[in-house]
Amino acid sequence: MQGMERECWWGRPGEKRGRAVKFTALGLMLLFFMSIFTAGCSKKEEAEEPTYEIAVQVQEVKKGDVKKVVVYPGTLRGIEETTVYPKLSAMVGGLKVMAVNVKAGDRVTRGQPLVQLDSSSLQYQIQGYEAQIEGLQARKAGTEVRVADLEKNLERTRFLFDQGAVSQADLDKMETEYQAARAGLQELDASLNGLQASLENARYDLANCSVPAPIGGTVGLVQVNEGDTISAQTEVAVIADNSRVEVEVNVSESEVNYLKQGQKVKVYVEAVAEAPFTGQITSVAQTAHQTLKTYPVKCELDNQKGLLKSGMFAEVHLNTVSRSGAVTVPRDAVVLKGARQVVYTVDDESVAHERDVQIGIEGEKLAEVIKGVEVGEKIVVKGHTLIDDEDKVKIVTGGKGQ
Image 1 (cartoon, rainbow, N blue to C red):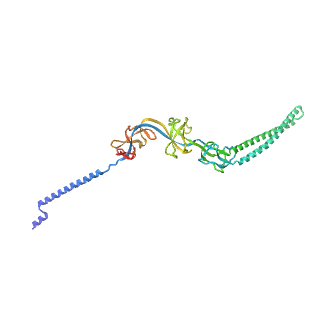
Image 2 (spheres, one colour; image 1 turned 90 degrees about the horizontal axis):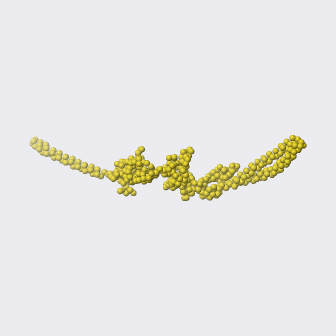
Image 3 (cartoon, rainbow, N blue to C red; image 1 turned 60 degrees about the vertical axis):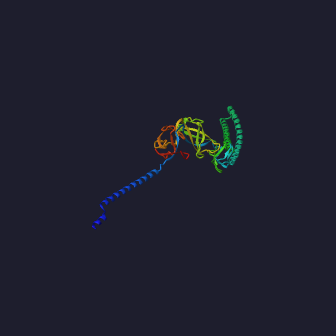
């Protein structure tokens, strides 16, 4: 009984070794299948991992003409523009503005009245001058008669003095009276001349109490109001013939020799439109400005539609040095990386490669490449700021893949 109990509890010795082998085999098989399952999942995950491609647009490097463009700021003004002053004499202290007949933006013709001044004080002055002149002229006539009589008496006294009939004192007295009468006559002449000048000035001012437009054009600015007192130094209005406008820019000595009279230029006026206006160089100074040491260049623009206003800010784009048959790339395709200039080329495997380039003349849209790329190579023109060297890219055009 004791032997049987031992056999049941522990089993037979052979059976014990068999069970151990079976358990070991089952464990190894379980580990094998788990490793296969894990490897299969891993491969599945690796296969499903996406490859990202950055969409870009490319363009082939070509030969073309490139022109360097320099930009200079300036201010528009009418070709014929004038500031209107009243034509008053310096003698008048000031006249009151009775009426302003125009406003900014009005079209006026030459001679059209702009402002009317009060003439009442001038009319009173004229009347007073005329009365004074009339009184002085009557006094002058009487003085002239007296001077003539005294001159005759003086001649007679001199004759009698020579004959010994009158004394030296009598002769001296007659000389004194004659000279005093002549001096009085000269004073009357001076007074009359002064009054006559004042009368002429008053008549001149009276004739100019209506301030006319000196040229035909558009009123750009009115600088007086009714009730103001103005003089010959007061700016009344600004008038410009804006059918053509001009802009003057100061060009550096390194650029001026590339410019010629008649050369076409682009002028940007941001206040009016994004697109440029076409202008023409009308004059290139041959002598530098004494203070600025630059050369004034004037450009004219047609303005039949009246969109351009005097005083607007403008940017003049001038073509200077140029080269034909140069290796060119779009200017925007060049990326600055510190002191380096690079472009991104794309190979047949759609992989981007960073390429250092040496840039020559830079135009508004194209840049000359002296070294770095060859004609026919594809370079990234859009999306180049999103990629790095060796990135996989997807070439698109018009939003569709190629």
